[in-house]
Every structure is written in structure tokens, then in C-alpha cells.
Image 1 (cartoon, rainbow, N blue to C red):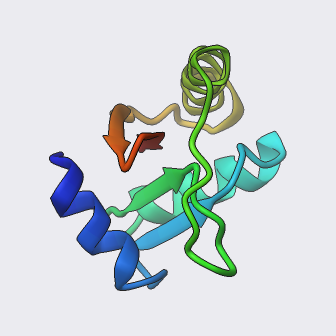
Image 2 (spheres, rainbow, N blue to C red):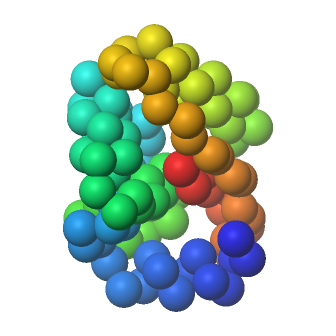
Length: 100
């Protein structure tokens, strides 16, 4: 996903197919959202965006590594049957965001 496309999605706010997370929430919470999206038409979880204001609060390199590992673990170990997710790091206005 290109930065401009992602910025446009963020500017439209959250909806039934887009959810913002400033940081990765508790395992159960993110697992529930992943399952909900996988049981419908899909969707995007964007990590690094404040869900109340839409402000960008990007992730550091270390946070990117941790978040990607945690997401993979949740998708494969915390839901049954396991789900396949795709993650992408997109730099928007000097902020690294993770799109799931």
C-alpha cells in the first residue's frame, strides 16, 4: 500500500473494515478483531494511529519487529483454526505504521 493511499484511508476514520490501534492491544483483543475480519469481507487494522483522534504515532524499529512477531503469533496460536494474515510497514509522514 502506498503512503498516500493509506493516509486517505486514515483520514476517512474508522469503520467496519478499518480499525486503528496506537499500539498493539492485549492478545485477546487483537485476536477477536482478526477473527471478526476473517469471518466477514476482511478489513485492515492499522497500528500506529490513535483511534480517538486519528493522529499518527508511528512505531520505532524495535516496536515494528515486536509487533510483527506478536501478530504472527496471535494469528497462528491464539485463534482456532489459525488464520493467515499479511502485514506491511508503510511510512507515512515520517511515521512507520503497520497495516494488517
